[in-house]
Length: 389
Image (tube, rainbow, N blue to C red):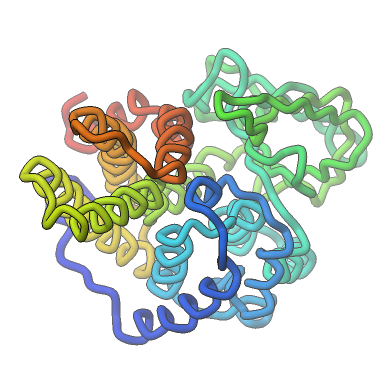
């Protein structure tokens, strides 16, 4: 569908919104006493025990069928769940990729044996996944990947390297996009996806520390790794079509507008405290708060509209790219705007938790426009969707 046509209005149905109270009560208990600077890590916050507590409530793999351990709910219910988790800053990183991407991918394209083995483990938060897409010299230009799997008498032999792989050092499996025929010059042709057990011989994982001191990114090296025939997802050579469908899930949800939301809440709490002492907020503070709320409201409506497409079985790749581009821009603007507003005040900021949260989000925010596809790649996709190139 062309972007020249409107997304249309979409609202969360009542049955989905009814989930909020249970999720909020669960988070009140689980996050009690957790400071804002820890909650700001949210979808980089790895806590297996938290993910397993969610799984016991049926909230991991919520859109997967009950026959495979899921809840059998629709994308609207998952939207409400994710929105609440991110708004509160819950540590969702352990199950995040498996729940959002790997599980739906295996369900849609995998064999029955793959579904029966992996999906119940995903839904129980017993199998954590990472995504092997980016490579050195490739970045977000995924069609230029050079890692290669060569067919053997029994299975495949994998060689190559992946880069910026989130949580590879903590995951059980990787879904890797690799070349199985042709060369990088063939672009989309000859790409396939495999489920790689990260315990196999020949796999080496090396963590990368970021500016905040965290180490969730990794390099992953494959040296003559032997994969069984049933590691292949779908048919050989269909990897690009699978990836584009997968990225529609990754780019369109509330995670593309709420990465800085804990910081925003901490700043608003600071303003409320100061207002009670000083008799109100300044015009500049009120203007900034209003601007952020207005932009969030518009982006949230776009995100829900895109979710409606997913719920209808569509793959709104271009709309998701637009959503991700605009959403991450706001996520990156929020710490800059808040920092500027605090710096413009004549009074010292006597809120260490707010300052720690601002420091973390400011340092990590540049990655928002890298993960899930760089701004340049997304805008190229959008231009093609508009018929501009």
